[in-house]
Length: 375
Image (cartoon, rainbow, N blue to C red; front, side, top):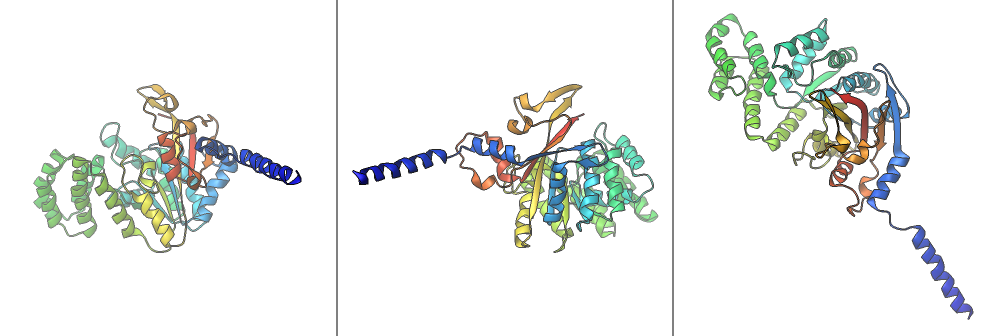
């Protein structure tokens, strides 16, 4: 009888243990992660404050590469970036990698060291394509604050992307203006023909100009226009990603600490979410492993945007851009930061989360929800 009671007790104990350690669903795991690993901070345009910012700032202490996967053209995010450059500089960062071409990066460096960067950016925006401007992602006084910080903290801007179509005309004019009088006279008609169809300039004319000048950096800029116009024509995302990697490694040296500020899709670990290619983010992730260092990427999102004067709530959008579970964390007064870095290996893929949520959890270390309503 005693042995029967003993066996019964053993089963009872193990049964209770099994129930108390019931397998959590992926939804449960994410909910627990959000509850335990969410911090916030406020930002008044000058200095961020709060535990969430301390976590963000510590990334520059702990990693060789830190990437902010942004939503583009945000004045508030540009102000925050300018402040982050100061913090990063105290941890040895001197390189800011942005989503422009190498040629535009040199122009941004020139503007950064000019007397009035904000005035220059405003003028270039006004002279460019209506409502789009001349230089990608640099147009406002808040963007100029980034350039001011670049100069103040002795950064170099790395431009690793294609030449954006909005910049074709500006680049071709700059290349022409840099030539001696004799070359200008010779290629005036060529430039006029190129500018007549600036959005898709003829390769033959670009080659003519390239072969007629001597400056290597300007020859490279013409070659980038040739490559980029074909990327646009064929929507070649693989080619664009390959170009980003090539340009990055043209800049990179072994011990460089690099702060990336690019669109979030480019900075995913593994295959990215929108174009399904191994983008620059994955290359940096693997480079960090090779260096026995670390790379942290932050997916930065805005719940509210404005379209033709109407506020759009991504949470209730049929084709939502961001996972709804993170849009629900929105706080109009605070930035909300979730550390999801430890969740990636814990997922069981039981389909209790949406597809876009799984994708984000696989590919990023942090999610940062902005309080901004994008104009």
